[in-house]
Image 1 (cartoon, rainbow, N blue to C red):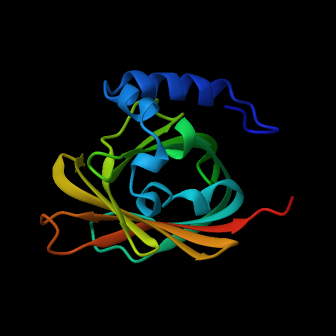
Image 2 (image 1 turned 45 degrees about the horizontal axis):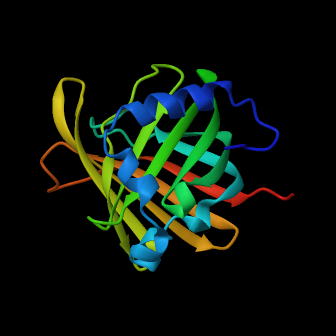
Length: 193
């Protein structure tokens, strides 16, 4: 995979690491988009390309905090495995220090679900994947995780708002999904070529 004009040393290492993290990768490579539900398998096509990002994050999570801070970033997304997945490279200009992060998204045609792994250079490891799918144009994905020694549920959403504008959100639930606190929003604007 080549992402034009990018330093791919981190991305290639991360992709190789992610590929070894799950044994079912071969099933994705052997499947074809034609065999899958075409609309569901193409759910992330809107995200391919280069984007400028405005990140909005809560200052503190799951403590009732309402103070947000913003910072810029970039995102570059390329399809892989004949359209059954994509890989991205993020540069986040966080006030605490700029860092790189990546996501690997894979569609499982048998389950008709997407799995999404996130990993970043500050702590190079794979978070548990969020898993889910699209209802109409909006994708919603869930996982279980631990935050500050507390079990939580994680929900992320992706939604194309127009061909050149999209949004991602992340929310945590400390009560198994009864309530959700959105703690991170990414506002994507397509970069001019």
